[in-house]
Image (cartoon, rainbow over all chains, first blue to last red; front, side, top):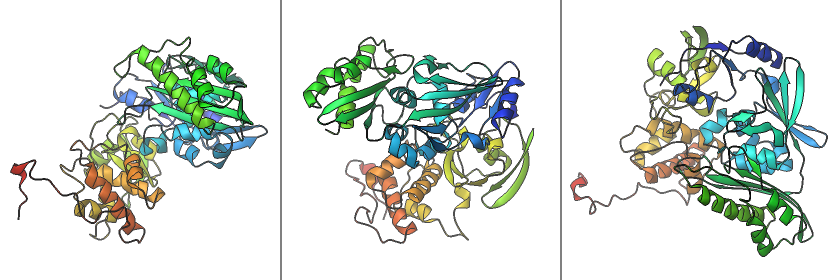
Length: 284
Length: 181
């Protein structure tokens, strides 16, 4: 199908983009990589009055180092994330999850910030951002603000981004030396996660000193598996201890039932995938 | 209408397009490049894959205006002076197609894969073309074709993982498809 007509703006700076969004009328959509937005527009589930295309905003691309964090520009493509040395060193969990996103054609166009701002519960990057305590830098006409990952994902396809605001960059604390793993369960012909688990652990001797666990598609927003994190903190890195902790992975979750999986099956998957993710992250 | 300038298969074009025009529709309907096909129209099947500035993309999920100032290569632009591209030749020789509808996208995605990974294993080929669906399910020979082409594109003879011939058809299971001699 062909999308409904719209007015098209192609700014080349963040300021121009904010102006274009402000003057775009009632219903403005921001086009990042377009790999979710264009399909939705083709189905006419979205028929915006104006589309503001960020593809030419060069300052939104790339990854840089800033003190104890790395900063990923919102328009950095999945392909660029996969080959980035800073991500490989300080946040390999992002690369591991990104590798599972869709397919190579989509990863050439799709962007890190676009996937986060779209906030699809079955998308892989929100749970990773949550597990890594990312911070979202958001620009508006009045200036910039920073939103922690825990506050960014508000509801199904809904984030803390307000009308007229743009996601500019994502700051991720450096976690050099942490073990990380993304464990995903999906149908082969469809890369969307039925359930997936993002795990990052810091080892000290034979023990897990700290653990961060993010859950994909266990509710309308990504979730932290806090009970698992608590059970793992200070635990011996053994298969038994990890399995016992992973039993709490679905605590307090209310996943949906759909044609891929019933809620109780998703809760079962969360436990199994958490055990596998933590085991791999701990290097066992 | 928005004016765009784009190079497609080595020729320059300037055209007026509606912003909502998808790249695949521009290629097919305004330029007559019908070698690139529309399969699923939902970004799943990859039949419409072309290269945009050297990278494989699904042309049903890019607006034509986004290609302004860019270089597009379609299946129609990869042979040189009538000589098939090694990937086309390998699909031909390895019988990497049945109905052929997925073939343009398969070939464009596979060239992109082999550009990144000069010697992909069978698993890497299968992962690498995960964005392309063959509803004849002719994947065995497609994988063989990609591996053979990878060898040729990078100046190697068929490696140990490549096969020198397409899969043998078991005509006993389907006697009505007797091999023509």
